[in-house]
Image (cartoon, rainbow over all chains, first blue to last red; front, top):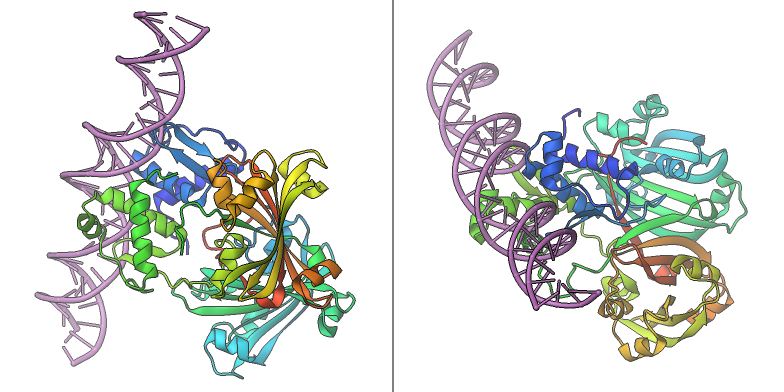
Length: 245
Length: 245
DNA sequence: GGCGGAAAGTTGTCCGACAACCTGTTAGTG
DNA sequence: CACTAACAGGTTGTCGGACAACTTTCCGCC
């Protein structure tokens, strides 16, 4: 897992840091490609590839004959498409993440989860149920399911504080991407009790299926977020390059 | 606006189409870079730059010494981070978008909108209020605000069916990206009336600020979506390359 | 002061070469 | 026969240089 990324990705990361640190502010013009390349002792084509990565991420914009400029894209505090896991989301709001309740045991697969993980309904799955807190306040109740042969309840319990993602990664099942589905809800009795709020409180439920790079679904989660504790944001790409469909 | 995009972007679009059309299925190996380049009569470096674009989008994955492969990323039907505008979202679900009510007039800027557009509170703004339908059913009530000197109510009315985005683009104010904020709500009396549902129905409100490539905010919108009419999904990038924070 | 054109600077594309790496084959060994 | 190790071929990664296309600046000219 400590394989060094390719040169262009390392160069891209350096530039990303320089932008995020504020050394290169929005609207600023980057040094020319030959300059950047010579400064780091790499070929211009390599530096160019790195710049292409950032361009695709939308951090910079190239203009032929003129130069390369940092875009005015805002740094969103809590971007749904980037922050992974409840802990990261809470941390992104500047609050301290914690866990109030935690149970981890084998549980027969509910239909929706079974379908996502491609197992028969009722198959025993490792289920991790947690109530997450932000600065002590209960804000999320979440359940994670994964196949028992991938991660047993015992292994997960031993993991302790570590994220489920790191636990899976150590088993060679690194999560590459996930698809999240958002649904507004009113808190039912169970959720209200777990989060210590009145029944009917506004909840945003996130159902997510995480898969490996090979497309194998390894983790299903259902998170009930207290609506007034978070603000969920997404950066949407403009309709520029895309053709009609 | 008809400036041809750079060669690598055109090549990237061709490859994207071949993947989306199913000609290249997930897991398939792409022809080698020299092969692809020669087939299109371009230099390998140009084709390589195009492939880098797709790699950054997550559509393909390169493996040194082995080849380039199409990833197993799912094609999500209604991706919040890609579909722009209510019409596109409705169309993405396979339903026919329509408009039930439409009013367009000057209106003093509410505080939140004024702040986003960087004008004093109460400044007259062009406000477009629409009730959108999917296969005839009322599903969204949306209000768009923009500065009157950018787009007057008359101009917008003349536009007719055309999207607000195209109207702005023709004025040289093409929208490059937007930041959306999601909030669950229960329908109040006004929304309930507009959407013809009971009070308290579950609503997902999307507040969005759209800006040009220069970072100038040009359009603010507030959309109340009927929760059970849509499923909102987001593809989330895995925690792979990102360091901890 | 205003205008036109040359000049310098920057990104876009092309070409050829070699290094690093993966994969399947083959020859050798037990 | 099973297993291992070396080999050859193919593929991506990086390098260096060159020229084209384009933008911006500046200088001389009117």
